[in-house]
Amino acid sequence: ARGGGGCVVTFVFFLDSSSGGGGAMSIFTPTNQIRLTNVAVVRMKKGGKRFEIACYKNKVMSWRSGAEKDLDEVLQTHSVFINVSKGQVAKKEDLTKAFGTDDLTEICKQILAKGELQVSEKERHTQLEQMFRDIATIVADKCVNPETKRPYTVNLIERAMKDIHYSVKATKSTKQQALDVIRQLKETLQIERAHMRLRFILPAKDGKKLKEKLKPLIKVIESEDFDEELEIVCLIDPGCFREVDELIRCETKGKGTLEVLSLKDVEEGDEKLE
Image 1 (cartoon, one colour):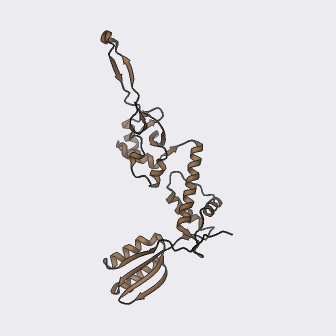
Image 2: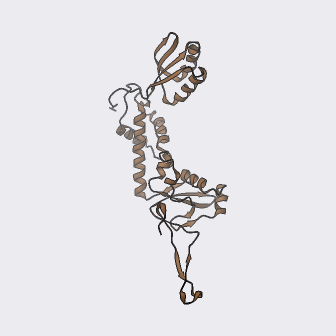
Image 3: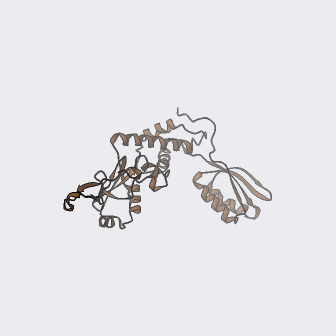
């Protein structure tokens, strides 16, 4: 019989000879075996034992990147196995000893986060190639040449990643790795995060004092107008946005305003590497 989520439950039928000529049928259902199909296995060794979970194909990386939030869309079952292909479920005492809990959902999350996805060599190669491309796309989208303010093409970033021999890590999200790549590329390429353009309007009495506190977070002040209020248009590193926002809200007790004029300060056209 086939259950939801690609789960196949195997029933073994046999005749009860003690019941006479009626041949009554008894049903034996193994309690420690679950058969699964179309499965992606994530394996983790802990406390000297092997533990596995059964996931849907293509969903593991979506979960790790944050694109998929619903655990039930990732796991075929919340069971933890010692061998998925044989349907052998892990013992409760082994799970408690290794993970310090018998909460299957929490254990599944741990294995999903830190375990190794079991795929064929061809699948692994395809997956890593796609991740490499995704990382390059994120870097190209977020960065510019600081001198020309022009963005780099994805192909150029891919070439630069190959030049520094960047090795994709299957267990880390593409966003995390994109930040690693930006840091590493700075050693060989003129590259930095594209600045955000902001306008903030500050009450006159807070203006000068707050401007001094904001100065270390501002890359470029493009315009400044001090009349009844202080109005500043400036460029900042995107990583400083939250700090700038909190500083203005707290120091002005909500009376200051912050407006994002553009997420990326870029010039038209792509940067070319000669």
